Amino acid sequence: VIKTAVEEYFPTPVPFEVLHRLFWGYIEFMVDKFLMKRHAMEILSYLSAKHYNIGLISNVFHPSIVYKELFTRWKIFDFFNPMLFSSDFPVKKPHPEIFRMAMNIYPDYLPEEFVFIGDTFDIDIIGAARAGMIPVWLTSHNHTPDWPDLCIINDLEDIRSIL
Image (cartoon, rainbow, N blue to C red; front, side):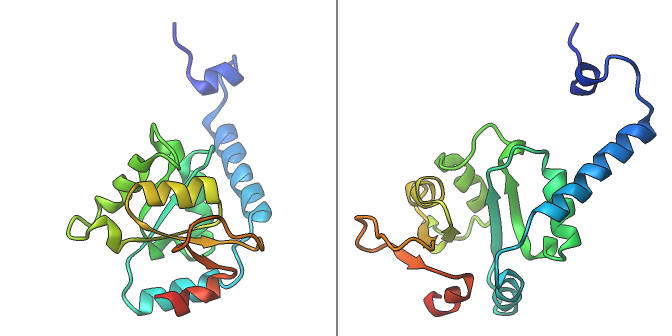
């Protein structure tokens, strides 16, 4: 007999209302604990006004509904297409396949026409480069990897100057 995750944690039946309250309590907790990067809203608005397509690929462990709710409350949900959360897929960054899944939303573009901005070198930058995208590293570190053409920014606001 295969048990669902709920049955595994709650061996006796739990009313839906209790699970619903637990779930939304967890959402509230996540909203309080996560912070948006500085300048994120103004950069998303700027890119959207310039008609750039903005996608999101994120390695996460919680169900994507948690993050989608968080993005809805922050009023940034509608900026992203596609919005890929690794918890929904069999692969995660830096695997090139998750980057390809995002690029497949726009089949008229070549991989080298996609710019991927990430803050984790080994996961975001390496993965995007392996998928053929142009990686941009958002970092506060002062060291530069041995990568001659890598674009490095220190703040989201710097995106305006590189596009």
